[in-house]
Amino acid sequence: MVRFVDVLSAEIIKTKRTWNFSLVLLFPVIVTTIVFGYYIKNLLGEESGVGSNSWIMYSRVFFQFYYLLYPLLAATIAFSLSNIEHRNNGFKQIFTFPTNKFSIYFSKVFILLFWMFCSLLLAYSLLVLSGNGLSYLFPQAGFQDYNINHSIITFFLRIFLTLISIISIHFFLSIYWDNFIISVGSACFLVIFGLVVNKWEYSYLIPYCNLQKAFIHFFQSGTEIFSKEILWSIGYSIIFFTGGYLIMIKKSIK
Amino acid sequence: METIIKTTDLNFSFGKQKVIDKLCLEVPKNSIFGFLGPNGAGKSTTIKLLLGLLHSSESNIHLFGKDLRNNKNEILNKVGNLIESPTIYRNLTASENLLYLNKIYKKETTRIEEILKIIGLWEHRNKKAKHFSTGMKQRLGIGMAIFHNPELVILDEPVNGLDPAGVFEIRELLLRLQNDGKTIFISSHILSEIEKLCSYVGIIKKGVMLFQGEINSLISKTIKYIEIQTNDNTRAIELLRKQQYLVKIKTNDILEIEVDNKNSFNKLISVLITNEVKIYDIEKKSANLEDIFINLTSN
Image (cartoon, rainbow over all chains, first blue to last red; front, side, top):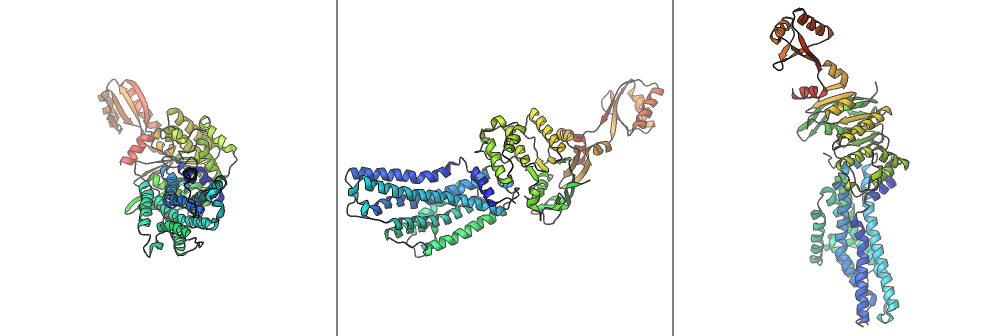
């Protein structure tokens, strides 16, 4: 019997040179570079927001990028991973391996969650590092006067738990349809839809609303992680990952 | 004789369309078994059933003497396959395509080099598979099928896209594998290749097995005939028909006569010589696999 870890290492080799995965790591680097550069320019021009919490003001710019664009990245990597098999007609081969389909499917899920986790960890690290860098370079900006690390971590954890559900939905769609428009196009639509209906009383049922809710939660200095909407997101993750698995095992190889 | 593949009254339908109908297949151990049939005969479906990619509702597929449904992983560990177009990850190099297989099958790392040399892609080991020609992809597909040194290799159209030298190399490779004790189940449209390679054949049409057995026995069962040219074909026809020979006029000069055995042939010659019919040319003919295949599948 082939072990899960062997299947996982085989799956990791398959993702080699899939640039969408590199993009997930590149994204926080790009955002940090832009925001950090923008802040340096403002601070040199003495346009700092003296009087307000510098960390909140600084993080806010990052988080606006993150809550809007991370769901699209999540959909893109979910599509890319599934597309590796669709494009190379790989399902027929992996189903003839002496291993169970459970290991194959969940090794793919593990890869998706691992990449997303690494990207968010990098985003968090870059935010904290660059903020501390600004504190060192521009003491007058007042970064050293505040510590909101707990709120920042809470934001990233909430984003991660929400992104798991979004990955599950788009991985499900990508396993079923080998279609970029359906997978990533639907993500664009649902992110916008999430922004529009965010104030609806039942919006906690829509995972795409939770990203903005995490942003608002951050501004309210909230530290609760497993709120109602996050629990719903976890529920969606379980449902859609299970659904994707069932679709894969029933996949017809004609 | 030990059988490696055995199906008993195997049935399979896509919706209401019956694709495989009571198929009984027996592939002897250490044979090269050619599986033939026209397009849509059910060859690929049979192969997918044998590999567990499609599921039969009954336990009527046995490989290595074990029920496929209950021993799938154990069986698949001993089977290599190439179904239709090879599954090759185009972003990976030839080496990486084998490396990922090695993560599953846990062979020694020298196995990658060994396979690349066998399939003649050692010099292209660091080239991405998306830049490979069709023939190179086919070779890599075969290399992937035999990577884990399986006891049974199932190949669907393995010489597709290969040039004559490539076809020859693959033939030699398959014969080598047979000498190493492997069993090879091969489906192909190239009948001349099957005839050169296979010791056993199965011919299928519309999901029904028309014939299976030793290729020599199949050919020996077919009617043999001779083609003959004489100085007086009209008289030759008259004389031979009196002796109950079946004579056809192939062209103006050539007669085609069915001859069952050596005695019949000897008698035919005697009849013509004693009646002073001069024989200018005589050629013995027997049906080849292609003739038999067309004959079986067209009727």
